Image: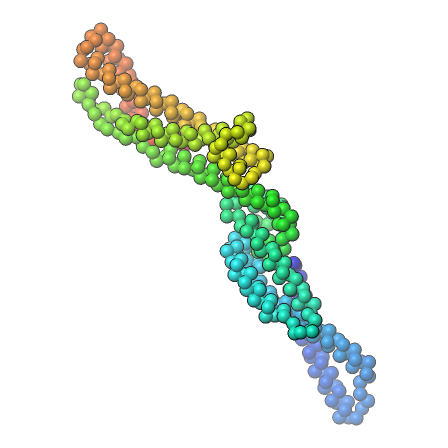
Amino acid sequence: MDKPQEMKDYSEFVAEKHADFGELNVEMVDIEKELEIFKMEPLDADVKSNFHDLKIDIETNFSNWALMNEFETAFGSYLNQEWLLCKSLLHEFQERIGVWAEANLKTEDGQAPTVMQSRLRTKIEEYKERIPSLKWCRGDNFTTDHWLDLFRLLLIPKGTSVDHLTLGMLLNAGDHIVANLDKIKEINDRAYAEISIRESLRDIEIWSGSTEFTIVESKDTLENSIFLIKDWRESLSELGDQQRLVATLKESGSSQVGFQTVSFFWIFFAHFHMNLNTFEILFKSFGDQIETWDSKLSTCDAVLNNFCEVQRRWLYLEPVFCRGVFPSEKARFSSIDSGEFSILEAHWLKLKQHYFETSSKI
């Protein structure tokens, strides 16, 4: 069971020798009959005794390995199946293996179990003990790095990919799972935290690519068409929410703050009982993304606030100067207004669609 191919080869060898001995036994019976017919001296008692002992030995081995073959036939499909496909069948496997053991490994009162029965019973008991710990190896949120960390702890042979990991391999590594259970739990906690952080960053990216300004068309004093952004408060509020999320990730992930801030990362740290080194590694893996989004959102916030102030002042001053309230300043205002208007017109389509793109140079 630990070396399936070797056991399969040996089982086939025993079956082959059992078949050969069956033919030899037929020949032996024929010889004895012929000796009796021709009234010749029977076979030597020692020869018959040795032949009988050999027969018992071969029958016993064949019976043992037949039981092993039956076990392999019943559960080989589970043990050799990919772990990613088999992990949802653990309850079924555990139930069926218990029923099989009860039907095939039970002995009559006073009858000693065979070697193979004892071995299979021991192996099945090991499986039953190890199955509960396999829940920490499900890897639902694992990335390639998490699987590699797990493989190193379990001493899974190098070169084994997740697609080739089987239930049998994990059950055989049960002792290593128990011995490294705290570290395996830590890998699970880190994977869960990472996917939560990754989802938060993905939400920010989706928001940045789908959020649009609310645009209205209007007229200036000279009846020229202009486009204005409305609902600034809502737009800036949404931007502020994203900034606070990124700031929380950034501040609580920094070792300089000593994890004194109760925040998104700190909740993960406390909930999953991560050690400090693991937590710092977790932050570093997302540090560049967090810094990038912090820079983008800060720049966007500054640009939008300035643009909001420019639009607000323009709406107030344009009718004042254009109607000649301050004639001496009208020419200056018109010059500035014309320049700013051409800039806005040139970049209008970009401003109309999104705050910024993920690759924005804002």
